[in-house]
Length: 382
Image 1 (cartoon, rainbow, N blue to C red):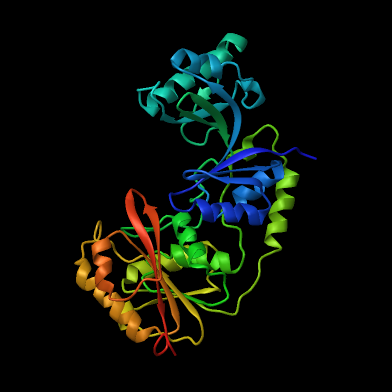
Image 2 (cartoon, rainbow, N blue to C red; image 1 turned 30 degrees about the vertical axis):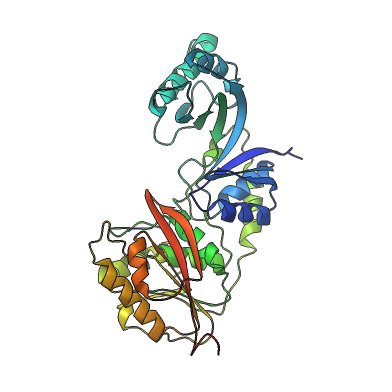
């Protein structure tokens, strides 16, 4: 049986607790939240499962060594103490990503990446008179260098491309939302497939797809072409296939509807194409409709979650726009739990409804809030 080892899952600001809950549900041990990251213990099979399943992780790193360092000489010496042939063939390719937050290193992260690359290349050259090549695209090994104060953590990246690249989205709109953030919003809303779900400004369909995958318990990254760990020397293809099949056996059906609207015909077409790519066209319906002219057409509890234009890249007058959102919700969507994300906090005041929750998030570089409004049939008292 494989022994457990430490791993680190990175995520977006505000989704740390959601990711920690995902990891505990999957069976991770010693789950600890950090800043935009969650550390945990698991074995090789769990590393495969985490990459396939986690909806709010950006990548899964496996730390291999830690050192105390105070300058570039320490960095080079430390990196050359690692037995790199355990992870990389001299005929292979590698790439390095660095993150630096230290008073001992005033140079930028790119420079540290270059120094780290030279140190690893020299390790092979001195030992084998040959060195592996650097490959930015699709390397055999991705190495992550993290310098925090006087602590160097060297990790290998098991994911490869960011895990937000699910493999289903081939078409996007002007201001698309990241798949990891979309899944995080759905999970924060509490939606689990046991109510109707509507995205009334669905764009290219990302929120709808993530909601459907959650409702049907479909692994988040089942449509990806591959992961970095498949190139590792200790990759166990049989174990990976067993885990994949085990996850697929948990897929279920739900009797509730998942629906999307958008007023732009081009957005509707893109959404339908992405939904088809995700093999979810049997579970999601998308129509060309203007949200402000819609009413709730399903009976029973409903989650309405969306990403309206922010006024950053899509030019709108936010005050009247948000007021119109509030009026439509109040008049047309009784018995509905409403969530949407916004970066214009002044604009939110014009919605005219009382928020029952506000969750700070980041959408790219934008500070945002995911806000909740509870719409009732009649008055709240009734």
